[in-house]
Length: 211
Image 1 (tube, helix red, strand yellow):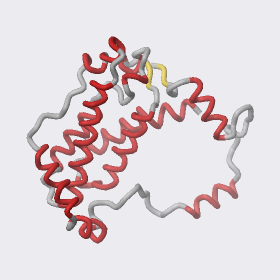
Image 2 (cartoon, rainbow, N blue to C red):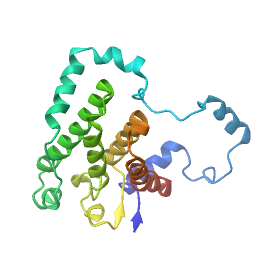
Image 3 (cartoon, helix red, strand yellow):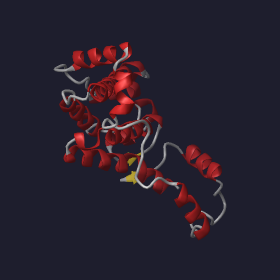
Image 4 (tube, rainbow, N blue to C red):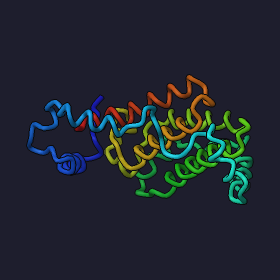
């Protein structure tokens, strides 16, 4: 399997932005003093964006708002309903007709579904949305590719011969990592492991090989 960035142009721009084009600086050992200076800036424990569900001092004031009640009602309406499916036929729609809307609307509904369930669980803190959240996480991990159909014009991601990074795949990786940070041990170990493996395979490894 060949793994690369979304396009040669994007890869080249990234190299220029990082300031490593045409130099051996990237492969050189980092300055020990600089490493030590950066280390002092880092927190002792890993952190993500936002506050974990266990930080009730952060979530409880928000949970009392009308918007929170609306989010919980939205999540309740999703329980027991089928997850919108990204079928092969739907993914291939763009390559056959040039229509982006049909598949991307389903992708958007899946994203909104997961977001609503996670927010509702963090607001309510009762555990009743966790089973559906885990189903959505695994469904996301089971997708053939996280790349949008319009960004996979050669269908190499769809066919599994290449893994590239686009805005959607990186956003999915960020979202799943944030959910894992927020819910942490509320999620089952197998689900957390699968999420970590897919982020590594679909985002981190392709990026590391690109640079």
